[in-house]
Image (cartoon, rainbow, N blue to C red; front, side):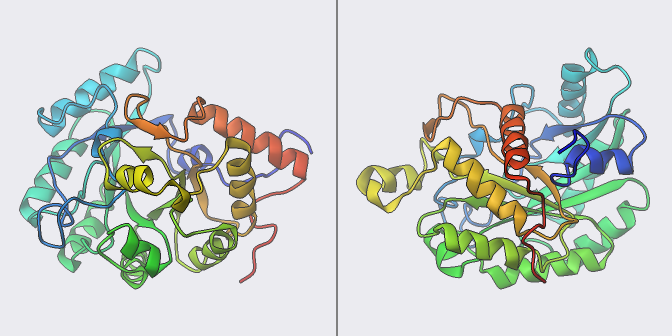
Length: 309
């Protein structure tokens, strides 16, 4: 295959199609919590979750959103003086507050010089219609992308990891958001307990039926301080953690079954080493991308090769 052969839809190419400049996400902590932590749905959160893995070194949640943006911009600006930025609300559930407070945080972020859009990470059970009304209006002024943590399409898995919603809830949220003309992203964890290879391949087909713009794939990571870490310590045989080469093959098999136009943003997560129990592959995200592309080239394959409507 030649160097310009299509392997999959890359997020960087998607951004270039939207913006006429280089764009970087700035991760923000809006000070929100989660209905699966504060008692509305449950306590303790999802069994795999430790939000300390989300925020980079430059993100200081005690600072106002605008100051976080400015610190993030300063972190990157020396390398790329002409770069523009997306305000990325990532930690916890970034649509879980009053509409007034949400709008205040979002507007504060996009008002920072150099910000050209906003990315909002949230749960599918936390997207009221009045917020969609606002986001639909907001995208007439700036770029908007909503990312939903779907994690699995299997209701038994969602119950086991204490997710607090079923897959039908995710389908509803994605459809309602896309119907407003707002780009929609999804986050999926590969390797959750009880989900084998056949289940994951079926999952790719199921997800392809949703009007998704982007998709993030992450390997299951066992993180210190989580319920799942305790479960693993008590019953390690319940888990089948990926070796690196096996994960790459699984990701490629998954990509083959995805709808060809879905934009793939990530293949793996990189948690802080001091919090990570397993699997510890010792590679960075860009190295993972290189390995996936190399193996796809060797396999003479591409996104959607095995896609069936």
